[in-house]
Length: 410
Image (cartoon, rainbow, N blue to C red; front, top):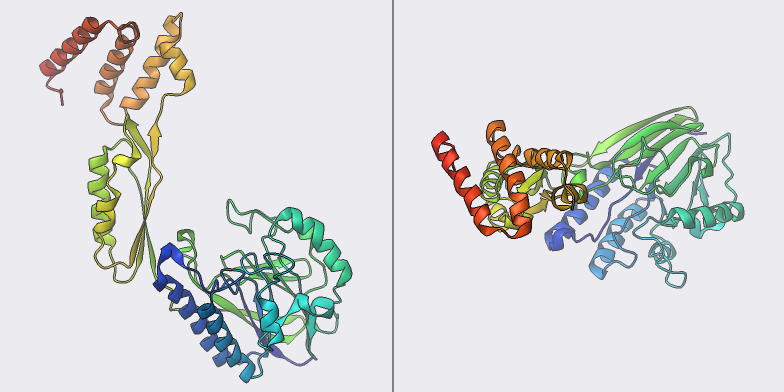
């Protein structure tokens, strides 16, 4: 076999309208165009696209026009584009089919599953690709049948590439919360390079008899990808067992800056003030700021009391502020409620109530004051439950007096 080179890219997500901003759709276009420019400079023998070229199964006409224009640049230079569909641009139904089919018919790419044997070959390599079935259940049902009808035939004398889009069921590969569509056992043996898409983090590991690689995404599709390097893989093959995977980094993707802070125990006004200051300090021209508030709010405080509009408006130079309020509201558990208000209270239930109140007040006050407040809360339970207003007022007045004498009432 002769030496050759190829590009492996995936997850361009052309047409993605992130945060409802047209400029973000343009960002995904810019990233793809930069990738095309870099690929043309590299002059590979062919390109493998491992799914999600498009964000949607039926892209808008301007998005489709962009893809046609850029794919034509490869065709004009005799660089074949071999593709499989992904979870976003797979066929929405049997009748409609994937958008990759008309692009194939127009000679702009080679949609592997659309061709006999689901493959493409040259004098140096054999490339086989599978369609995406979106879910684990459909994959388990339909992929074995597809493989039986399109039997993979890797050639031991050639360099063999397997193109797919999906997460392998391996906790070391897939991000938390992502469903795994593919069992490793269902993937055929005998390939030298497994070209994956769907996982947006660039990954390269040994797999079966070859290398498995996820080339990553070209732009940031979610704030969790903010620190992931965007780009694609360039592979130079000297012989079947001698090849190098080089990472080509893109520079056009828009910067995302993450502001994550734990505000446990703080009042809404204080949280708003501190978060606003953090946004002002992180503000950068053209960036996307992602503000994530975490922690446990004080009792009787709602997340809606935090002024998100004020926090967002603190950015004067950023393109957009994505605000995520993940703070938890303090609630009395059913166990604690029963312990405090249930019938037949005994000393141990009051002790448990005291311990609960103490934990709550410790989020805002010193240990001494938290203890005093917890004792007051327990003392108030019985008169409150019986509607004894005068007794409640007396307990509160006595507490206020003792706090005044200590100089701690605030």
